[in-house]
Length: 323
Image (cartoon, rainbow, N blue to C red; front, side, top):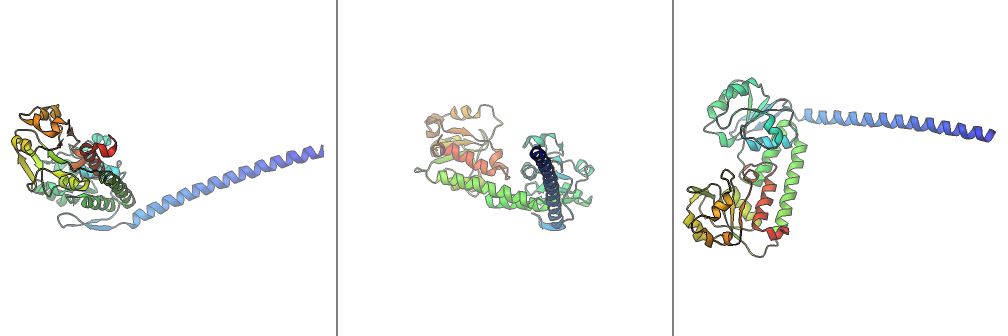
């Protein structure tokens, strides 16, 4: 009986000890979580005030992490959402469609934006873009006159400048760590794509069009698409500098191995391209290598740019990806 009583006492004491340990661990976890949150807040606070120079040479001083943000162009919007600023974004461009959450945000117009509406949103910062300069100068000045911080983001011309843009917007919003992670992930994807295309034995000749006939425009030298083709070891049949107007006859003459269609405003555009006069003799048409690629993946210099590189590489060298 005495032995049984001792066993009961031991069991009860063990239960109390486990409960006490559980409470201590819970309190410890809560304390650790609170301390981590405080450290994160302190780190964010320590980043401000910060002064950054924008694309037009204006020094913009940001006193604290912005709580209300307006984005004036899709690439900026994609970066801001990727940084985790969904709650802070109060206004976006009419053409913003990615991510899906962007569709739910208040619209401020397109290239012709609604100055009064933006002012009424009382944003802590407005992220404009260098591509807006000229047509939007007067409106941007009105925003500045209203006391709103307007940061003009540089029009990135390559991957490195895109990385810099993401890091700069990260600094301006107190999201430097998130920006670093995005850039690291993009670089890893780029390296993965380049490793696969480096094994390609035969370089393909490519024609890329960004608009339909009768005015077919294509990127030539010193364009973003040229950099992408260079990265994956493909030859651009367009040798003109910048964006060139190319006739259907010239495309037939160049006889590309692959034709990339980088627009979606024309229904059944791939079949339409194949059926152009004289195109049946082009290698790309004969080998069913007329391929449509989402233009937003390569035209928006943001977090999805590395994905755009992969899609272009797959379209040109499907064999390198086991397709």
